Amino acid sequence: MANNRRMVVLRAVVEDYIRTQEPVSSGAVARNHHIDASPATVRNDMAALENEGYLEQPHTSAGRVPTEKGYRYFVDRLATVVPLTAAQKNAIRSFLAGSVSLDDVLRRSAQLLAQITGQVAVVASPSLARSALRHLEIVPMASTVLLVIVITDTGRVEQRSIASRNAPAPSALASLCDGINEHCHGFGLAATGDWLLERAASLPTREERVFVATLAQVFHDLANQERTSNLYMSGTNRLTHGDGTLRDVAPLLDALEEQVVLMHLMGNLSEMSRYATRGSVGVAIGSETHTPGLLNASVVSTGYGHSTSGADDGADAAPVAFVGSIGPTHMDYGTTIAAVQAVAKYLTEYVAREEGGGEPHDSGGGRDDGAAHGDGAARGDDGAQGAAGDGGGAGMAE
Image: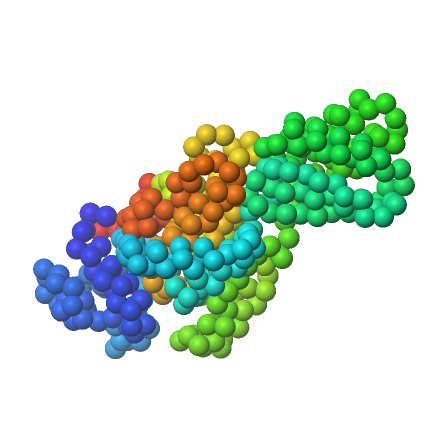
């Protein structure tokens, strides 16, 4: 925007409203933000910002508050992420280090993020579609039932049963597992299923072909199935203790019940953030969520981990899952983004250790927990596939 002072005024209004949730007057902006202009000039700037749709005036005699468009411009161009202190980072690491399993670390991550932000935290399990095979075991449970145990590179363990009247002998099962573990270690689950189908076609007996084809279907089903039970949520009880009215909170609670919708929304945001500045986050504000219950809320999400299944090669590998926060549109974006990035960074390191790949990768959640955010927020609306700082934010007229 050509008018730099107007940008400063918008930043001041948004920051003050986030802090107080009270309409902001031109006098308060001129007095508290050391703007080199008179209150009358600031008042004119605020009126222009209102005409352009970035601010609105709830009542004739009141100050002004940001609109959804104003928040979007603030997040895209004006906001900065305040670095977490060394003590805060150590506290995160210490709290999560006590985890005993992948499920435990994800549950703790959601609890911790909710505590830091005072908002609803959502953490997804690593996606099976982007996970690679680490180890397979097939255990006879009964004469006609076998238990298939699949362990992925991210530490996720999935169990499925197979009913087979002509199950291979234990020695043949052991040989089959050894062959799969040798040839398919590091393969994506779908690729493992494809390999099994190719192998099945070359087997000598119908019983063997049917069994291996059934096992292949297990891997294909795992690759295509994501369950909402693998979504960890914390902080919903905080909604009733905030400053929102029941009219605002009730739709949000309903939206949180639609976990499939949340997984789709937050997963898309974390995907879009990949194509913005590296290490950024995705932010959807109000109507950008395309979810009626979230019209008065904002969603901040980023991916964690890096897929090793071969779906994406190179440095820009897809994240294996997402972590995010849901709160009011007047949330403290700087704190929320920093917290989401910090938790994502730890989860990326945890998944890297589970993969056994040596030193952890760079975080999927942050350039550094305090990096400037104005050039990297991916939008949640349909028209924002790129970095907001590269044109994703709405322009402001002079």
